[in-house]
Length: 337
Image (cartoon, rainbow, N blue to C red; front, side):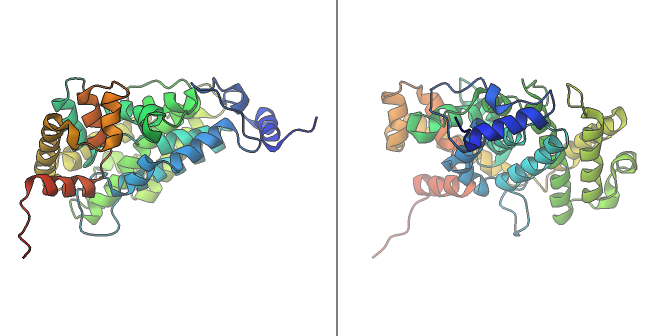
């Protein structure tokens, strides 16, 4: 029998990928059985489903670091996601890992992020008795929220990578480890770029103890970090960096937390944003019937808790939409005569 395009692709993977790569043909599969596509591998299908999801589209209007910046060139949660994907794919391709699996994990890793970035996440975690973590919510998006309770039915490897993209996590695949590291490489460097654009500091403000090792521009630092990961991970069963470069990157990350992520200028609007998310949560907890029908069905049809469902609705909002909902609920409208 003649092989179809997908089967040929799977054979090419088997013949050319690293022995440490995740082969599409060896996926642990999906929770619900589906017939295989004759063209795309399982991880290509997962990537496509994420790109076409509503949650992915909403990332374009969600905060990365700067809330409602004045200017067109600041990162959003979507552009962050695309930069993570680009860095991760470059590393995976060089290491002969599964680029499709890597891309799917990267594109899905922040789907559960709230409006106003980590500020919104902190409020929902504070208000909800069940807690709230964006990585867990990202998995909930693809397993349940999308498609009105059916989810995207992604493979176990992609969901594992999405869940375990945090600093202290341990993904089950090398592709997941690549995304975990690419996430840090991306946000440290693009947040520096945005901070310089916002005039919070200048390139010369960054301590030489870090720039002398990593480079004196965003471009050179990205080049150093990506090359170091590839050099130290090639033909091994782990994704790693050299001690000097890793220490410099983590030191620079700590410096960014002090000078940007908790900076009064960069975070000047966070108090207002947190207040809005807090009030929206309290409002919907007291007015469940004000939720859209889809979310009411999560409670009454799927027997999900009120707390979790209100988190689902608010976490899915873009910055703009949450502001408009707050205005419509709490700000009096002008009379029209």
